[in-house]
Length: 132
Image (cartoon, rainbow, N blue to C red; front, side, top):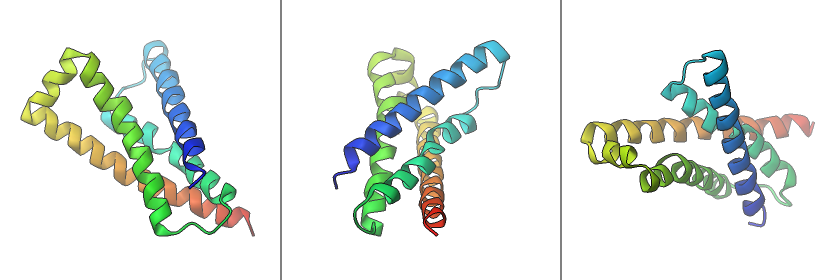
């Protein structure tokens, strides 16, 4: 699928920019930084990804195509939010070594995956509505 590199880069840009902007808002405005916020910040860009995939595809995307897009975005999220911090930061490795910390990390990953699927579906539906 020719769209995958463009969609991957687009999702990575969304993820990083939203995290930086929200980090600044947490520091300056005192917004709460919760796990639920992290899940929404990671999943919301998939509405745009779904819209762009449906718009720029030269054929109708099948369930396998949407699953591939979803898995790619979930993998990018896992790399940026879990794997890279575990490689660089000792406290993150300690969290993953603890069963309770690992359980919480997996719960966030599963929640993010579910929300990503929802937002991807919303983006797909938005394109279908815009085509009318």
